[in-house]
Image (cartoon, rainbow, N blue to C red; front, side, top):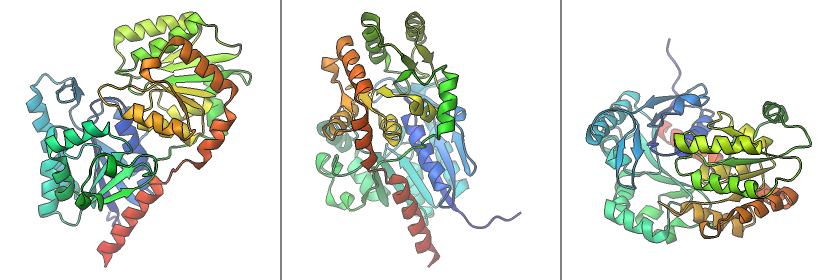
Amino acid sequence: MAYPPITKILMYSHDTFGLGHIRRTLAIARSLRKAPATVLILTGSPLVGRFNIPRRVDFVRIPGMIKVTNEQYLPLSMKLEATEVLEIRKRIILSTAQAFQPDFFVVDKAPLGLKREVVDTLHWIKEAHQGCRSILGLRDIMDSAASTVEDWEAKGIYGAMESLYDEIWVYGHRDFYDPVQEYEIPETVAQKIIFTGYISRHVPNAAEVSAVRKELHLTPRHQMVLMTTGGGGDGYPVVNTFLKAFETHSAPDGMRAVIVTGPFLSASHYKDVKKRCQALGFTILRFHRFMEGLIGAADVVVSMGGYNTVCEILSQRKPFLIIPRTVPREEQLIRAQVLCSKGYCEYLHPDRLTPEAVYHKVLHLLSNDRQMSQRAADFPFKALEVIRQRVLAHRKETKR
């Protein structure tokens, strides 16, 4: 059976730490189905199969790697040398591109891929598959200006962006944070940049929210505080402080807390958190397939401020508190400062992070949620439509 021509999009998400990259990639993929397009995702995420993968979207799972430091990665589960696993990943990526013959190759965040693993594929596209457009997708903020410039200069990122990519999509708003200026991007690269705005997320309907609240045994009189740390690999200090806040101060009457630790929280830390949640009467979850539903059921959200989580919260106009990490990168802190300065959230700097501070911030948000919710109504969620228009424009060009 022959199928009519359809735009083919190959997306790469290295996924060595956390859940943000794959969740952002899936959000874009779901939207692009309407282009119409069929999307194939290359990912190292060990959890990709737990997500709801819609029709016309599929994935190729490459062997997982885990970040040890900013520059050191080890195999997630395979008993092989890191260099061997990286070679396997590199060959799978290239072979998939050659077999799939995409019209677009969208690389998430890492211009060269993990340890340069997409470079061969990018060169193949330039030399042998010139009808494909290579796209680099960058989140709104990468890291501090000084760290990013140093890293990009050392790795030859500026040259790669100029020679290997046709477009660079920045999933943010230039008035919020300007990477062209902050990261000293040369004009030859800057002219390829398209600021798409932020990536909106699914907003559950009333029935879906009601079902989640019923699942959590919440009545209409309950106010729910959701505490989430994304993947959870570095989330224990934040969860620990949140728990201490309500171990030393009584939760207000009617407040319920749900803590999603993330699947990468260590077993020992999970055991500790579970025991303390049981003592407080809090609900603990390691992972939830429908985070949008949990956010929809919440009255206040406490998070670390990763790009993905922030977009999910703001899509539903929920009042929220960011407790950002500053190691190994400062992007969460910078994002928190930017959003707080514009009235979209509250945040606590790690240097001022105490149980008392968390407790008072949460209570303040529970009592004063309307203003922040109204402010979120004008958040610049335009990315999915801008990206879709870029795909449609390229398809029209190729038909001429």
